[in-house]
Length: 125
Image 1 (cartoon, helix red, strand yellow):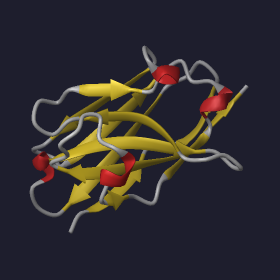
Image 2 (tube, rainbow, N blue to C red):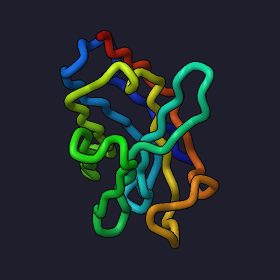
Image 3 (cartoon, rainbow, N blue to C red):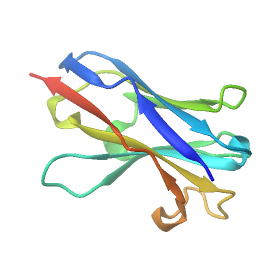
């Protein structure tokens, strides 16, 4: 069992930066691919970024490339999402998710076994 807790969300002006953290409890964090998703009111959940478990490869949604960076610290059981050049359309609840040893990269959404509750990011114009 893995529990995920996000933090670091908040209100920021357009063009600003935030760093989200996702702390994982449970064993074998290093064997999980860790992803970020977001969901804005009235919209479907969408994939943002993922970092692989075996080689820390990363993959990003096209709309965040060059602005967001995900990283992981296996010693701290934590994954990060550094967001810069934020736009009002980035406002959403950001959640992290874990996929145990997925055989695809990036993992299919159904392969994410565990989800956090999310943290709100609001970007003002």
